[in-house]
Amino acid sequence: MKPRIFLIIFLMCFIFGCGGSGDGGDDNSASTQSAQILYINDPTIECQSRLLVETQEFVYQRNVKSIIDNNQLHLTYFSPAGNGDYIIKYLYFDIVSLLEMNTGNNQSVIQVDHSRDMQIGFTTDNSPLFMYQGGSYPTCGETEQSDIMLSLFQNDQWQEYTISIGTVERNPVINNGLAGYSSDMIVDSTNTIHMCFQFLYEGCDSMNYNYPDLWYIQFSHNNLNELPEHEVVEGNEYENSNKQNNAGEHCSIALDNNNVPFIFYFFVDSPPNRDNGLRVAYRNFQNNWETQWIDKDIHVDSISASWNDNQEKMAVAYYVTQNSYGSRNNVLMYAEQTYSGWQSFVVDKSCYCGNYCNLTFDNNGEPIIAYRAAKTRSNIPLNQLKIARRKSNVWKSYFCSAKINNSSIVEDIGVDNTIHVDDNSIYITSFSNETHGIYLITGNMEDME
Image 1 (cartoon, helix red, strand yellow):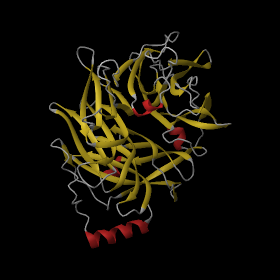
Image 2: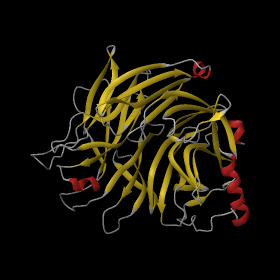
Image 3: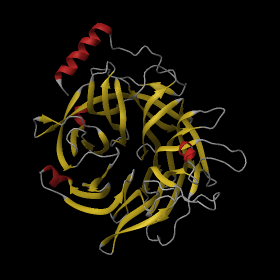
Image 4: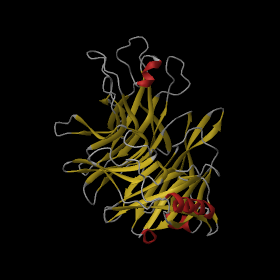
């Protein structure tokens, strides 16, 4: 963090005051609470960074995914291959060796064309698999591949399988659609793969871009000879009510301790209500999908769901870009499941922040979120990585000063974040818009007291 930015902010706070927002931004509902925030003067913690890979500028954001497990860092990203094509690259590192500046392993996985989204998961024997938008093109001549694909390592080579082609039953002539604009994947303890994704394109009717459905698939990676059946979690109804809504954007899936799927997503209801906000769908005891509002009258642009095993509750971090309960937009929010329903909290509204949020928990089951701070409320650019931590029911936020070799600071970072906590150590993978590099950033929990 550059000192001159903090000097400007300090002077503004001294003149105008920074103790509270004064915009009624915490009065959205009885279930939403304003956390105690260290405004503007958020402290900075020193973090160390290691450059994992240098890439070219991405066509789309959210193209870097990583998982840290058993001291192994698994990283996947899109790499341009020329002629508008991309290669999904997969790297894995031993954390100890990486921190000693040794190199990792790099493999090409599969070449794809203009894929918009990609996820990574692991089977119980630590075999990686990748979900992405690929396959064939729609009959209408769309330029983006239209299917959900899965790639995994079998028989000493990468094998690619088609998982969903987005069939439109109500159009017998042109019956393929576009699947996968927004997607997520998780593998449970029985090696069952759970996928959620949007289905946007029906019968080559471009109007249906405005009314996507949220789909869900579960299957085993050992049985990929046939397309698995999909389920419509929430979406449009054309036969009876002609109900048109927008479901599934920025979907994030998590499993509870019984492997029950919870899918969080942005939702816009059909007229006349047109309610919009953060929504969750989950399996009930009758094995049907049940939906609930978590936060209404907001627009959500980034969602990260996770099961809190320590406290046995489901939780989600989300980035609100617009809301109807105050003039202050672009804030980071957090919600968790309670016995009386979902309870939401404002985590950080000190600046325009919350995009690329990623949620995890410390050893005590307290939430920790990595996210991007774009600019101050006075439009001074920040473009930095932040970390928010809840302790003793108080949220505190910190700028993470990502230093290279204890000297220069990585600028314009905080994109495509993934955070992992191991005892007192924090590990974050993050992309820099300035260097086009993917970094591993490490910090100490003791610096966030």
